[in-house]
View 1 (cartoon, rainbow, N blue to C red):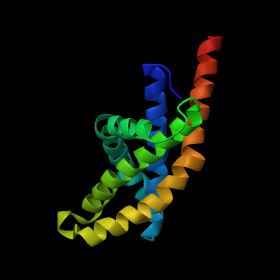
View 2 (cartoon, rainbow, N blue to C red):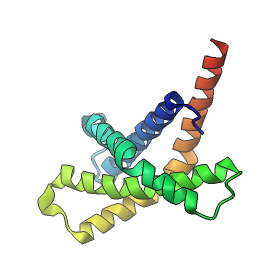
View 3 (cartoon, rainbow, N blue to C red):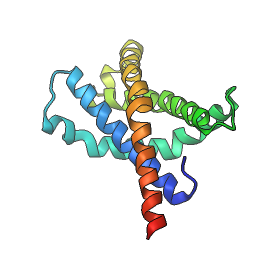
Length: 151
């Protein structure tokens, strides 16, 4: 887990980057339009919005909730997974709304559409986060520490 502000930014940015990239590919593929242009066309905007939501809206409450869950606080992997799950719940909630509005406009927003989108996104985001993105971000963080230590 990150120990300094610099490490926290590196970890947050890498998590956000890989999650937005993975979820963009997933959602574009779901709509049958998988192409380079479709994936990278909206990616920068989605990344910026996700990063803002992560840093200013979701992270603090997610961490607060995760730390109240009945986990062994001495085992950092349990704390990290709890935070990841809480972050996924928050980010999927906001980014599903973002995706509907960007792709279809406010007029297509309904509770049924939102719940459908949320469920489809959650089903992909949770394993993507826990099995691929979190380990990758931790690897990048570890590599950064080694580079800093050797410099």
